[in-house]
Length: 313
Image 1 (cartoon, one colour):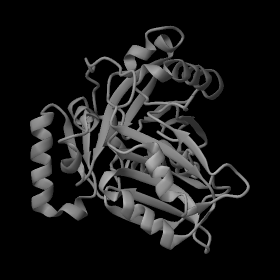
Image 2 (tube, helix red, strand yellow):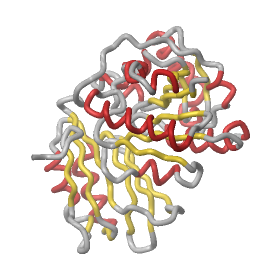
Image 3 (cartoon, one colour):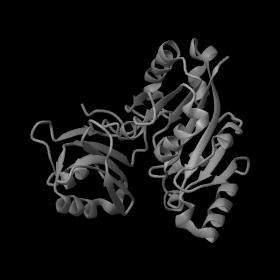
């Protein structure tokens, strides 16, 4: 019997990791053997750290988009490891927020994956920021169009009228997808299980959008005032910021989505300190320069640079 694979898509900051943590805590999944594939643009693996408290088997892919041909070999190797060593009942695969959806079924055409896995459904998470990115970020639109189910998250921020407007927009983009409205990613596993996968006809991508840049800045100690200055400097071109730093009172998870920055204590063990920043029409070098005075790491290299998902020459 092939192992069902559920894809979790959704643009940056929509709440995919929160949703995954919720699903993993449901009675239906807590009693089953589940493998997670976490795909991030950045070397720090922040989402993996946020999920490790809820999952036993996590595999990180951070050299490109889950749907990109550039990590095809890594993905196949990961599937082989999961089938051989874990033998789970369910696989949940979280795609990067800038992933332009194609279909993982194309990756399962060769043995042994062909006989051991099947794509069960593609679940896309959206939040109030969708309308901000639709005009210029093609990946956000494609994620919605090819979803089998749409989770409208953070409805408490939208209100009833705003939620209705967003639901209507989503129906225009993808009338066949089932919708559910939630707060804090609290979608029922029954909704996920009820979805039926429709094959996506778009070809796999070979690289991220040219206008996209990302970098990972390593380091534990951070100056809060300098950090806020750096954030203000790039906020007009920021898509996503996420990481773990210490402003002097212990590890905190910092998250930025567009022009909003939040922080909360990080409760996990052995954090990997640093931040990953994703920008639009800005270079990785400019983002690094902005945060150079904010993050100090005398024991490790200050910056581990990534440009369009690949290490620089």
